[in-house]
Amino acid sequence: MKRLVLVLMLAVILMVSAIGVVSAEEATNPPGVEQVTVAPPASPADPAPDPSGAATLAADPGIALDFVWVLICAFLVFLMQAGFAMVEGGFCRAKNVTNLMMKNVMDVAMGSIAYFAVGFALMFGADKMGLFGTDGWFLGGAFYDVDKYKLFIFQLVFAATAATIVSGAVAERLKFSAYLIYSVIISAVVYPIYGHWVWGGGWLSTLPYGMGHLDFAGSGVVHLIGGAVGLAGAIAVGPRFGKFGADGKPKAIPGHSMSLAALGTFILWFGWFGFNPGSTLSAHELRISVIAVNTNMAAAAGAVAAMTLMYFKTKKYDIGMTLNGALAGLVAITAPCAWVEAWAAVVIGLIAGVLVVVSVLALENMGVDDPVGAVSVHGVNGFWGLISLGLFADGTYGNYTTDGPFVTGLLYGGGSGQLIAQAIGAVVCLAWAFIMGMIIFKVIDLVHGLRVNPVEELEGLDVYEHGTPAYPNFWIQR
Amino acid sequence: MQKITAVIRPDRLEDVRAALEKKGYPGLMLTRIEGHGRQKGVSQQYRGREYTIEMLPKLKLEIVVNGEDVQDIVDTIIDAARTGNVGDGKIFLSPVTEVFRIRTGAKGKEAL
Figure 1 (tube, chains in turn orange, cyan):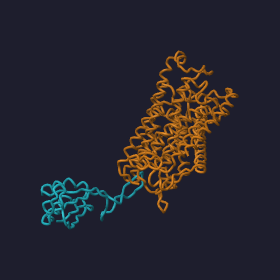
Figure 2: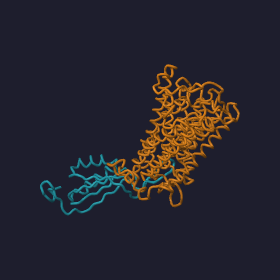
Figure 3: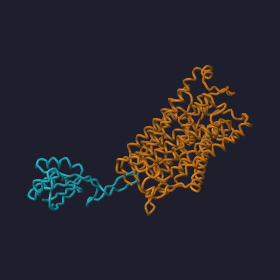
Figure 4: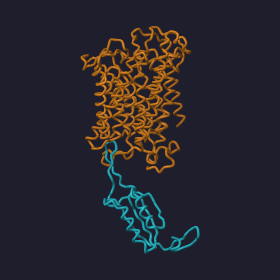
């Protein structure tokens, strides 16, 4: 079992590195790609690699501020891993908490190595036909450079976020070893390839509608990818035992700690102040204050909308849905956060809060078991976030830069061009992630097995998979 | 000698204990239990779905007393534990054939 994981991981790394070496030799700089989407204002010809940073600093002493800004934001985004761990742990039962903590630790660890070896090169290496990058394997060669490393650490924590979203959707029944295999593949291939299409100069960013498909901090690249792969995982592995009664009606399976779920939501909300404003990749774009405000307003509106809707439905102030509502607002504002003003962020968040409640209940009624609401929070609202950009962009911010030409959405008289670009990107993102997710989980199911056996599921994964209960001194309901 | 077994609401414990203390009862055993009588379960909500908790948390007090004190102690417990709502609990009596004090080996009334 363990050998299989290692062999698979090595095989993927070696295969993609081999492709990279071959294609790096023939790679020339394609003239069509002058659109540097995420990289900071770069000179047309890349300067020589600067591993010490001395030359970079000498060329522009002010750049130190950008480095500090991006690194601090990357560290904030890293903290979101703790947020995901707490939300998922809190919304699941005590008998599976060790397993969830291990999954949340190991998707960062496995994902870091996979993204370092393969993913970053596929995403940000020299573009090949708008489809994938072709150099920078293992951060070697010209990528041994302070600027590249800065971009890498920021992008790495984003890749880890996409990977960790899925663990919630497949929680309490997916084999740990299957999860390790999945984490390598999503971080090495699924996330970086789509990321290249949007942020690496790929074909979605150069669509002939509006300014091409735009996604500021990753409603699509990070959240819809994670949510759609999560949906595929939840469908492939099937619902938890006891989620649906003999009549097929969904039943509540209460999570073991609303304190942890709320703590996790606060950590995520806080981390998002790195996720969105940090995505300017520059402290010299003072738009960061607008982005920070939008981020907060959407989260607040999402929580208010979800709580209110649940109150009208059940006459109770439901904490699970309210926490999901705040996260839904955050996910939705992630794509448009740089292009909209505060009132629009509130509207986007309110709609996100409604969408998440409707989606959680609808998915359950369709027989899909997503214990923490990951598909509804990240998938549905990632999609909504991409679309909302095409509606609410107000013409004050350009193509990932404060300089014009500016992005204007449908409601500000910019016509439907940007909206079309957003819709194309959203549908492509959903299709790519869902289909890749289905293939990954179905293949793992065939060659390795996807789900723990029924005894293990009833007793809890903690003792069977890890030998360690999460709360050994407490009586745990099975 | 009789054993009084009283199932009460967890939040009534302090009043019951204080009332018993005034009577000079010999001592009590306390067990945290779950169960239900006519009250049945309560309904709760999680992420918009209702579910029922069939078993409710209760406390079980056990007190062994001399036969002549039984009615007094029972009345004391009833007074202190009653709220008047469904779910106040029940009291059972059962005979006890002998009592030993472990420290001294004494038995019978002395040992209580």
